[in-house]
Length: 131
Picture: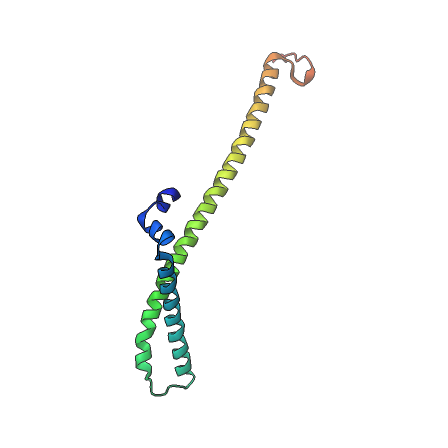
């Protein structure tokens, strides 16, 4: 699956053309805008920039909040996928261990049952009890 993703035109554009520098520049500008907005809001709440009304700052908060929720949703989805993968790996490991233990117990029971059937259990001859 990863080979299929690597062979897409988008991956080739990012790897061999100016896609990676474009994405990195876009990311840097986005981070600068978010940090700048947070800095301005903090300075206004501390008492600086009295000419900027609080109502105009309230318009910026939902935009930043929606962006934060989108990033949090993606991070939570990734964390959920990681937990599911980890749980599936643990389940597979313990199921294998239980099946191996069960197979070992079944083989011991089969050997013991065969010895009981032949009358040679515990290296001695067994005689049936009269009822």
